[in-house]
Length: 432
Ligand SMILES: Cc1cc2nc3c(=O)[nH]c(=O)nc-3n(C[C@H](O)[C@H](O)[C@H](O)COP(=O)(O)OP(=O)(O)OC[C@H]3O[C@@H](n4cnc5c(N)ncnc54)[C@H](O)[C@@H]3O)c2cc1C
Image 1 (cartoon, protein in one colour):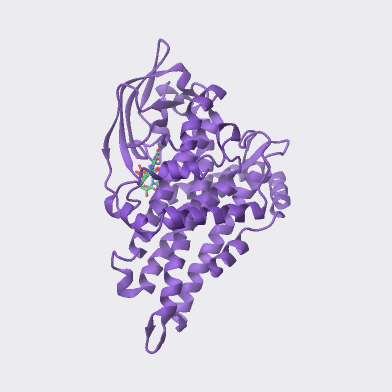
Image 2 (spheres, rainbow, N blue to C red):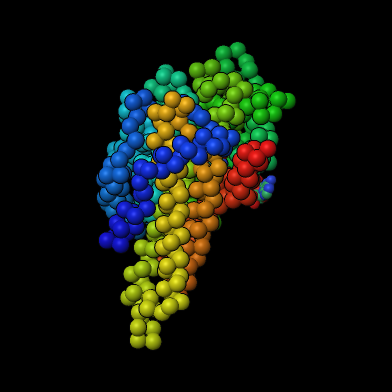
């Protein structure tokens, strides 16, 4: 624990980053997305101390509510522990970026990363479902819903009485999400939705789902609109829960929309402007989700550091061999570098909340933070298995689960290839 406290304090960084960020912005505006309302009114960026206090609160929560047996059972049974939603709500973690008026903490994106990191350290799959709810649904509503919609939807989502999800991907539209085929046809009083959505986290359990559909199919990206679909709407169903390699227990579903009537009151944002909601949401989604692999890397270190110091071969702890020291050092530095990237990107967003030009979200770094952390987490969890030898290969030990969970982060929220493409395109834009 002392060791990890040291890691945490080292990686949180300093407020000097803000000055550097401002200068970078002045040089290369093309890579930034200016957005004026990414935090609740009156938001004040948390101090380093606030974040450490929050981290300790989440650690208390996970020690109590997500001990190893809960994490192992969630994976083995491939079932999310549904009572966890209310516990997360009571702890205040479900609306970390949302306005206090609706029960949120209004603490911003560094705080959100802090919570997801610690939950994922305890259980990758509970962490993923948590993020789909708190970021993909709650934060998208916080940023784009009307006051009336916030009152109607956010309160229950933030207390944990309701479960949230976001449905963008389809069988034939994953990386190329703009090619989605789900349609929303205007009818009297609203729209009729038809189509399917695939791989939707919390899909089998969700009460409220942010759904993207084509209102003007022939207009491509300019014909997409976002809606809030309620589970009780006639014609909506979850066809099946998917059986996955990892993130088991984070329930993932295939959703069906058959003439689902969505009333005008459930339009999210503006008609045919859904791509703006989607793309801005994707930046923040990638940033927040980059804290998932951080938690998994921490869990890998939690396993191997004591193990390699206790396990003796040839009369000495295996950690006293240089080959093993090399692996431990690589795991540690990969974790620290990933964490520094995630938190400096989140800090720039929080610290720019009061800039007259609006909050600055760096698309390139949101993609970069998750690209880097996700690939490092897969490497670290493979190393964890190797460092534990035969024990690392048996399912009683969590190392295998960590590897299976880590791999998802190279696929979900846009694959590693698409993240590289996003970064490359940002450079192309900057130098064109
Ligand atoms: C567990 C899980 C949870 C998920 N949760 C959600 C959710 O809550 N909501 C949601 O909307 N979606 C969700 N997804 C979907 C996820 O976002 C997509 O799976 C992802 O975007 C990849 O799309 P795809 O699976 O169709 O792969 P494809 O797009 O078919 O890609 C296949 C391969 O080709 C590569 N590729 C594709 N295009 C290019 C290119 N132009 N250049 C180079 N390589 C390319 C990809 O990187 C990948 O390696 C989830 C997925 C999983 C597995």
